[in-house]
Length: 454
Image 1: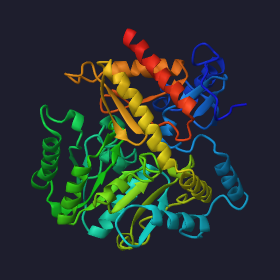
Image 2: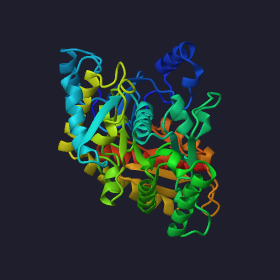
Image 3: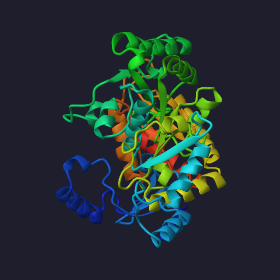
């Protein structure tokens, strides 16, 4: 029986094993090829904590965590019981027609928790991060009466039509146009790749100038409803927004009647060392107007949330928000129990402690290895950028692919990020044990060394 404290082991010698290979063949025959990649030939049978067991009995430690969904782990007993109890009452009701207490209670708790502006706040739910971001933009347009949106280089906001337009990497939207108009992209402050020779202050000034140029060259500020920003970019390479830049952007928004949307789909729910990363912004006097979150909010069940002040939320016309499954009772029950556990067991502190250990490990590895160019992030949302040389900073994309492939065969799941795929992201479940974390980091080192020798 799989236990949450178990360690990874490959019993088939090579991955995939026989049973997984047969199941993957069925997958390839039944499912569009766009969903059938070869990087992860893994078929889950069970999951506990930060560990999964595949259909052949191989056990993998997971440093991907459902791309930020599994802060609480694969199957938490308390969450299972909460969902089970709700399932015995009713599975579904559409909130636009029939209210249920779980939706209301979860909204109340998020209104207390979210570090966005406003004395009184209101929250409503959607099903995914992309839907949350689309809804935040609906809200911003309703409140401001404007149509323009500013997004940023490196951004990822989802795969719906509007979210694809907001997302920077066009591999996610190839051949899918036309896209909505009045979307403008500014440069995100990627300090590691700022113009050579710039100090931190000079780099931040450079990125701010690039942003304000949009008002002259693309759309006047009076046309812009909102700027949507990830406090820590995910797909873009795990890049934190420098707080000095955030404060300056907050002032630009205030001076021009523009709303600031914080996309906390991935970095929320304790991942950053705070319950929400926007708490860092609020502490600096730069709280956002609207916050979106999803992923670990529901502990694995689909739910996302949009929160803003009462004044902003009540500007939205009836009929323009909501949906059939939004705020599903099972998802609300899961989210409520997850929130209780996150608070009770201080998951934000867990993230901070894990992040310190992981950062220290990689900084030590960086000293003796030319290929590690940068280590960055907040809390336990960390990115390790690999380059061919520290001086040239040329992206080492193939090296990262080799590390990921080696790690899989050694019992560790890793994923890349960044526009060149040369960043490895760290998103292990926050319930990971010390022994598992140490084991995973040693597997990482081993896989890196194997890739270097190739």
